[in-house]
Structures are given as C-alpha cells and as structure tokens.
Length: 600
Image (cartoon, rainbow, N blue to C red):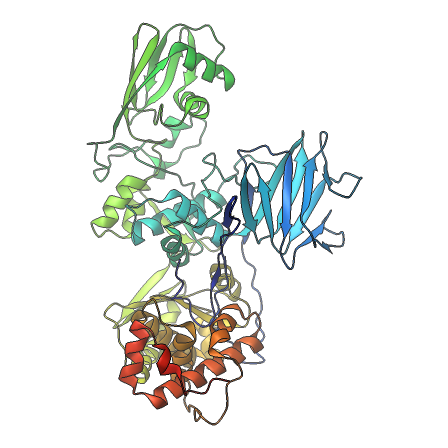
C-alpha cells in the first residue's frame, strides 16, 4: 500500500516477515500535518467512545501461544500492576479452568496485558499486534482482545468485507454501516465488544488489495453513523439480496420494529446470475442441526412452513417441529460450509434421502446489499443515495451529536462541517486555495474536500493525529480542527494554505517522488519569506530524511525534519528551474541530479 498522500511526516507502519509462517502486521497510521503554533493549549471536549475491544482469532481455541517481543514490548498481570519489559520470546499456556502460565514462572495468572507491540504465533500463523492486548484463559483455551481505535476497526472491516466491484462511494456507505453496527448494539460477547468472524463483522488482521481504498472510505466518513428520526439506528449488510431486501423481523423475529429495515425491491442487485442450488442428505442436515442444538436427530420430513414479505423462508417444519429459517441456515453453515445454504430465500424438495434446495441471494438480506451498492456506485450514485435505497428514512449523521454534515461548495473545494456558521469562512478558505495554486504553480481539475471537525478530540479520533497537529491531508481530503478555533488563533489561512499545497503536490506526485521532496516543496511554498537555501546546512542526509519525516513522534522532531526537507527542496529549485523539479515530482529524481545540492 503506497501512502503517498499522507501529508507532512505521516506513514503507515506495515511490514511482513517470518519466512516459515504466515505473518500479518496490523498497520498503525501516524497521520500528522500542520503543526500547532507553540504555546497553543488544546482542551479535550467530552467525546463518545473512541476504542473497541476486538476478539482476535475467535474461531480458534488455542492452548499455547508464542510471544515474540518488539523493542518496546511490556507485560503486566493487571491494570494497576507495574509493567515490565519482555526482552525475549516467551511461551504461554492455558491452564485449568481459568488461568495461564508464562514460561519461567510457576504461578499461574488470570490475565496478561501486553503493550508496545508483540508478535503472536499459534496454529501455524503469526500476527503482529501493536495495540494494547489482553490475554485471558478459560476452560483451557485463550481469549485474546485487542483494543483498537474505532476508525482503525472500521477501516480494517471495510477492507475485509469489500470486494473488487466496490468503489469509493459504495465503500463510504459500507463504512457508515460497519461503524453503526459496531456502536449501536450489544453483540453478546463478555470478553470483548466484537469478534473478528462473520458472527459480528469479518476482520482480517492484515492488509489486502482493498486496504488503501478502505482507509480513504473510513476517513471520509469518520464518526458518521446511521440515524432514524434523531435516534441511533441499527444497521446491517449482506453480500447479495437477490433482488429484494429482507425486513429485519423476517430474519430476527424478536427484533423491535425498525421501519428503516423494511423489505423493499432492489433493482440494482440483478437477479440474473444470483441463483444457487444445493443438495444435502438427511443425515448431513440432522447432524448439523443436532450439533447446533436446533433439532434432535430422528426427524424425517423437512418443508417450508412460512415465508416473509420478501419471499424468504421465515420458518421450516421438521415433522411437527417448527424451527427458524435463519437458525437453520446458520447451523448448516457452521457445520457444512456457508456455501451450502447461502440464504433463506429458497425452495426445498425431497428426492429419496436427499433434500434439494434452489434459491437466490447470499446472506441474511437485511439492510445494505453489497452487490446492489456496488452497482449504484458504478452508476454514479453517492454514498448518501446508496444509504437512502437500503435504509429508507434514515440518514448518516455525526455519532456524537446526531447532526448531519453540511456541504458548502466553492470553486476548487467543498467544505464539510457540522456547524453552519463555518460558511462565513468560505472566503478565507477560497483565498487559501488560490494562494496555494499561485505559490506552487499547480492546479487540480477535481475539487478538494475540507472537513472541519467539531472539536479537537473528534479530529484526533478521526485522524489518530497527536495534539500538536492542526490539520491533516490525504489525497483530495483535508481534515481540520474546528475552523473557529483556527481563526481565533489567526491560523486559518496559513493552515489551509499549507494543506491545499499538500493536496496539490500529492495530486502531481508520481509513485517515485521521494517524501522529502514532497514535504520540502510544501514547507518551502508555505513560508511567506523563504530563507536563502545556502544560508543554513541541513543536518540530516537525504538517505535518512524521508524516514525521519515519516516516523517523527514529537513536534521538535517534525520541525527539524521539515526544515531540512525545505533546505534540500530549495537547493534543488535553485540549481534547476521549477519546471524541471515539477517534472521530477511526477517521474522521480535521477540520482545524478542530487549531486551538488549539499549532502551533509
């Protein structure tokens, strides 16, 4: 995944290792951009929940784990216990009914808390976790719970659940549904909030081909959930509805009335090609239903008892026993595979000792249909239009306040805000946009989006930025702390000008443009009175500068790295003309062009 669009010294730490094992690393974003002026004290406003506890490897029941520490790994045995460094690889084992032992320690403990990053290995798989991890044991097996920022959770689920047909708008709609599902109901787990399997929402603990697009979708909708008549609304999605969605009560009879989850035709999910057929023996079905506790063995006849509004089966009759169709589908899926009975929209007949199923659709069919959403996006429909199709009467709004985001457009940009009074600053934003183009000589055919968050804490939760950052840019999308706060500190114009410069530079950058050049040009053009490029020598070499820009963790480190990047960029512009440097921004700088610009 190329993170060329992360402004200033942002980067994702993603790596893959271990030649003998399948190893996945969880990306940890550090998006940072326009630094707050020294002395600006920010305050944290009350904010909603910012993290979720996610069960890791929840379909496994491992009894032994290998822990491989990183340079800062620490372990503790309770919240208030002192943490000590884990310096060497260690093995832990689940013992008895409720306890675990760490190799080298005789006394079992009930919990092991790991911070600072660790690689876990079990069942021939490895995963590197950099977020806080709680390990407990019960009945001789481990329970693992990772504490993830909500937006990172949303990003990883969208990457895991999306497909190649998805595009930006369908992914945005999915991100809002994923976030709503995670936050708007209890999912029935004691040790964590959600599991990483399809029981909740599928989460792969590694990057894939959809990671970058999922990241953009999560950022663009950060903090947005589904609301119905000023109340938070439950939201669901399935792979393919087959041409008509199911009402929630068809699938979950005990669910309270949910008008936004009504059954309705879906012209975007074409029925052609969505049919399926399956053949199962009575013995296979009897074993699956008995294993799930749905029905005891011995029954002979299976028939549809009742259908719902969408045409899906609501209840089945096993001889004289009535069972729910959805629990039947789940029982078969868990035991025999989810492709055997993909949905409850089917006909069933018997031939000897075999039952023949013919149906359409995949999944429960409630809420958003991923196939239909992808088709809508391909036809130019927006995420808002997709949500209106699948959740009639509901709308996306800010999770903390329930307010919908408002949009104000001017030439070259669109402002998104929860506060209508921000429209008074459109002229200032337009000036920043114009000055960025004037100083850089760059322009873009598509408009940029500026999202002004309602509070510093909301901005941090969305971007995972530290407190010394005032704004953040990724691609065409700019996030900012409250515009009113920036204006009060007289930072509105320089902050947004800086961010528009980032957006313009990234718009022009090719895949081989070094980070130091992109950051250096922005830093140079952001300054009202650029210093003489030969007045001060850079401290860092070009070989180490990009890494320093990407990994700086303090304002002082960031400032030093950006200062050197600006010096190198200034020297390059001084030695060659602007047209040549911009051409190299698109194609990459030849190594001989770097000779003589003052390597330390």
